[in-house]
Length: 226
Length: 335
Image (tube, rainbow over all chains, first blue to last red; front, top):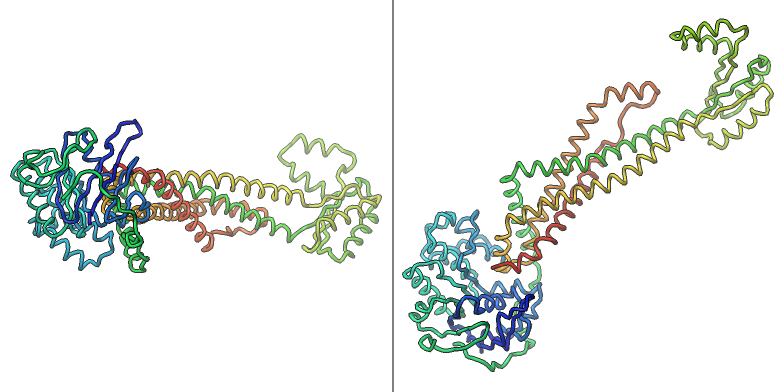
């Protein structure tokens, strides 16, 4: 069963600009896929629709068989708790410690402090940041900040992990280590979709790739086809 | 793996509708969320104590003015009640009224069951009192001494018990005016009417100013909460993305409103206490000169409780206004 299905999805903004046109795609449960294309190709819009931040103008998006366009504002938060999101610029809260940043989704979800501590330490361990939980984000390097962002995205054990240009600000070596982390989470059964325009990095990963050009899906296949 | 085109959309089945259901609320979640919101609010207020004090002062002033008018109204009503304990009338005789006619009227009044006291001021006594009161004016004293006859009439000051209504006093007045020796009868309710008019004026003014200042308090709180929201937009966006519900996002800001409102009400109570303390001496002197009770009524626990409740309600209203205006767009601007 597909975890995610885009069925002829079109997104047109108020100014008339069409960010996505009739895009159809399926993402199997537990798969890891790259979403690539030039700036403005519609990658971020694709992810925004999947998070439920934007609503498709036409077409439907199904996640685990549910049309997320019909979730409504009350059910949407519960859906989002199953989706981890990683951003290019981390979106860490500067006045909170690393621990509190990672713990945010768990506290929202009313987990006990004991469970929060256990899970946060586990997530920080996976991104190799144990021992830095009491630091503030500004005390970390860019790569470390991105890893905190990833820890926050995965700490709630989401079914789907979305990343929007997660290596955009990183040097090639750090970028590869971040990609390795995504692969590890994917191996644990998480469906991963990574939006990136770094073709070199995508080729090196040898993963399925969806290519977007001016809002239209032009190619689907292994990285070597792109 | 991803596949292109012609995906078969999977309509929402009964089972899939059960995905991401809204769970039943647990009491422990409720308390945990509120505890987190209160803790965040304390943290924010303590970090920005200067601006929080400023907001409290603004809300406090906005609440203190209508509260002061309410106190004034309560005390005017009390004065009104105090005056009603001593109703009465004054009977003025013709200038050359015969003493036997005066005694007859005096007896008539004393026989009236509602009369408490009848005090006679004869023409000579009235002149002496007038001369004493006009001692500062030499020309007036000289003019009075040149008069061949006393121009002032005798009069009776009558106190009646407080069961007597104004209508009964008016009937008694008409009865007394039938007497040839009686020139005029003045029922002592002019000052009462003025007091009642003043009380009504203060009451209406209190309502109008109360509404205006309450609106002011709501807007001040809304502006302050809005600033707090603007300062935490990034956090709100992240919270929204990780699955915080609307209530979880709004709650800390509603507590800001509670803090600002209650803080403002406490400041208002302090301002009123200081004001009452400052005017106590002159007020005692003024009311004492009218032989009226000098204790300020109304500034008690129920009043302070109402003030706190009002602060709370206005603070929450301001916070909800700001939340409605500002948070709505936050989710859409996640990245």
